[in-house]
Image 1 (cartoon, chains in turn purple, red):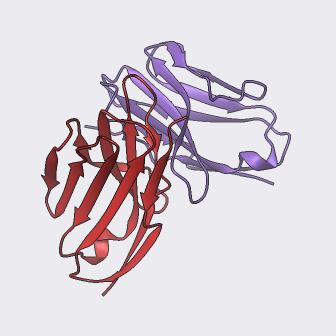
Image 2: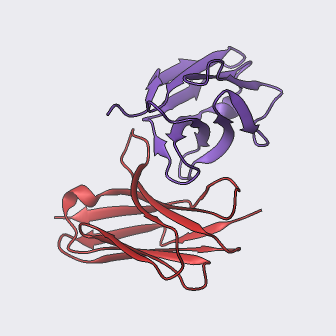
Length: 112
Length: 110
């Protein structure tokens, strides 16, 4: 069974530029999560989808971050414009229940 | 909000030694999960616990859901070099989002 797929694995951009990350969850997993992981920290939830509906986006900075999961399968997370402090690893996870989440390899973003 | 304290922050051990790490919560949890993260990869689920007092093993790993429901422990027996990585605890109560600890960085000296 294929795991959670994320792309790109690495992204380097200049500040004020836009950036987008893509995630394809494990087949059959209705719940999809985007997490932010800063260096030396655990993952922090940005947004959770149940199928195509965002059911928890309270931690998503909505002034510059947006996400979509139009057909309830793959998802895109966008930052526009990026700031220096956005440099981090962006992890996608999926689950078929609220408990056991399976993570992708992450996208490491560097904002210069 | 909920907070998790994970300790120790880092450990240096000799190959073959046993390892213990723990996590405490400021509130009661009904789920505890333990993950391992290798450099450049996402966290991988090791053990899931759903019941107070539950003790679950996965090979050389054993985790326990504390009786108070505010803590959990992970033990690794007879450590080997591939155990190197960062171990995260995560927990939740009810339908709240999963909360992660800051991780325990394990280094194994051969």
